[in-house]
Length: 285
Ligand code: GLN
Image (cartoon, rainbow, N blue to C red; front, side):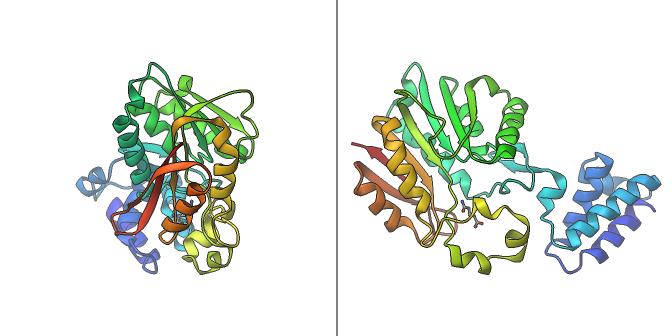
């Protein structure tokens, strides 16, 4: 088949999905290792049989609901391409708000002017938050803990890809279990699982059936991880240190309350581009 015929074939295959043309082109481009523009400029080029077979395999995965980024094994975040796998959540654009607000907060409080800054991330997944922060501050080191061994491996790979491996200490373990001694960080950041248990079954099918539910399930009221991170993490945070969370659209007040009762002040809720609560940042008293 030619590129043109394969695009038409893909659009037909994916007619039950949201972006049949875009996804077909992305899959063809991925297998051919070419940009989408190349495809459009070379519509009459014919594709080798083994590649055509691979393209059809991926189209059929997409047709049956596999998210496009698990097929392409990459997702852009903060202008960088990160490796993703089905063992971790696909990076969401909303999470950029958490990174941007935390960067602002570190600058506003002049913490970025310290000789060395130390951060802790709980649950890095593919490592997008830590790696984006490490790219921003060259005097920053982060310890990132994840209970999921494939997340640990992926975070490592992404840190190598983006040249920050030496400043990212990745540890396998739940919450702060792998952080010992008298470590005091300047900030703790997390995008923990925060979906209420019984809301999970109402999520879009693509999320519910393909993304790791462990990375979404925040317990009965969705707040389990905020309580645990505030409770266990406060020991590892300097006075004046920053606690920064991504939160669900209706959790601003609740997470603020968790922090308020546990020795935090200047707690602010930030909204995403849809005008919904998305980030909470507070400072340890
Ligand atoms: N924002 C994600 C979603 O809507 C949830 C992320 C999380 O639980 N940390 O699927």
